[in-house]
Each structure stands twice: as C-alpha cells, then as structure tokens.
Image (cartoon, rainbow, N blue to C red; front, side):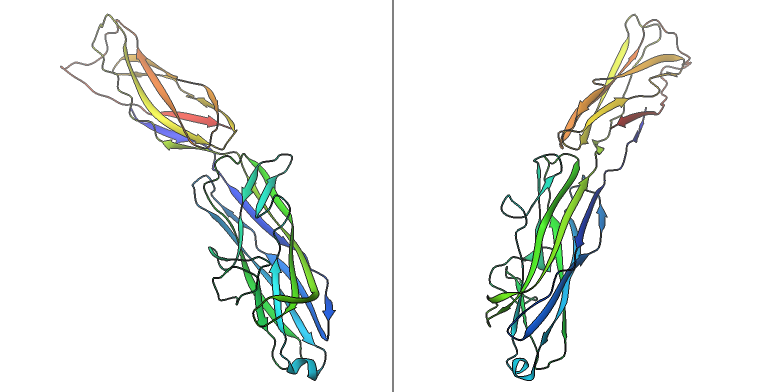
Length: 301
C-alpha cells in the first residue's frame, strides 16, 4: 500500500518598520534621516535563513559656502537595540530569543554597528560614512540595510518576536569614519518576526506490507516508519482518517504508535502498524496475489 500526507504549511513572516527621525544640526550642517523596509515572508521550518532589506535614507545640507568647502564627513551608525547585548529579538510574553544581524554590504557581510565607520561598499563591520560634496544644496543619501535571521534556531517556539529599540544615528565624523560631532538626526525603527506553529514529514512513511496466507491460524502484521518535525513546543495530533480496508478479500486495520506529541524542532519517529485477522479466506485464485491501497496520515496542530 502507499501513502499520501496532509499538513499545514509552516510560515515565518519578517517585518522591519521604519519611523521618521528628527533632524538636528551641528556647526553649519543640518541633516534628516529615516529608516524604512519592506515585509518578507518565507518558509522557516525548511532551514533556510530569512532576510529582509530596508533603507536608511535622508539628506544633509551645508548652511553656507564656507562650510560646504570643507566637504564634511558624515557618519551613520545603528545601535545594538534592546537588551540582551547584541542582536536579539525577544518573544512577546516570553523570554525566548531569535538572534539576527543587520548588515550594510549585502545580506551576509558588513555588520552595521556604531563602531568606526566604513564605506558602504566595504565588507568591514561598523557604521557607514560618506563625504559631502562642495555645495550648499541638499545632498540626499540612501543606503540599504539587510536584516538576517540565521538558522538553525531550533529552540525558538512559535510566537511573535521583536526588537523595537533600534536607532540609526547620523553625526559628523573624521576622515576615518569615526563619529566626532553631536547628533545631527535620529531614526527609530524595529524588527519583528512571527513564527507560526508548523509540522512537516521529515521522513515519509514507507510501504506497509502484510503477507497473508488464506485461512491463516494467526494474524498477519506489519509496520511502516516515518518521522515528523514540528516547531519547538508545538502540540500536535496524528490520525488515520480511514484506518481499515480490504485487499483481495482480506480485511485489515491500521493503528499509529502514538496519537499525539509535542514538537522538538527535530525529527520524531513514529510507526503505522497493520493487522489482518486470522482465518480469512481471501479472493486470490492463484498461487500468489498482490494488491495495494492508499491511506492518509493527518497531522493537526
């Protein structure tokens, strides 16, 4: 016999929200800054890291020609967010963490911090800095940032995780990109991730074989193994909606090794057990006959 599988699709949604920050001034340079992003949805239980791209943008203006002629250096840093130290989102109404990183070069390199600034095209970690041109016109800037949640993080249960205390800060800096001046502008933004309860068959059921002899004095039995992976701490149930059948005139029944469980984020092993009762004649008219029938295992969570 063969098997089909039914389950719900796991989904992780990542959203980073930017909030316009206030402008300010140091010396004769005035700046404004904002942080925005786009939402992203992706499969999380598949083991693929999750990324979303946002933008930190704004403009700076030199108030007069004298200030513009110095071509000031501008530094943009991003803080470490709320405790604990480093990049972590905390589950709402819980203490579990999802670690993440913010990059300035691409989705996997150039961690964006408030350390010594670096060119936006460099893979070195730190804040981003640039040099203004010799003009009193407003000079716009726009840099992508990349939020990445790596895998595996198997002990993160389903729920909503967030870090809402991120701040992008713009200051004057020296030619090495090190911030030297007072704050010219701030943009507060946050990141959040939603992990839904999910399960999937990490190993599909093998064929279950019942070798039966007509009028057998003892029942024929067989089993088939499979493995199920569910989100950490997710309760689930297993059922076979149609647990009986008839093949070649022989009636049989199916049972599961367990009817429920709690997810560990790793494979959990189960078996389907089949039994054909003794003393059945069957309808095979030759020395040997074969037949098969499909059944469905349903996982509820």
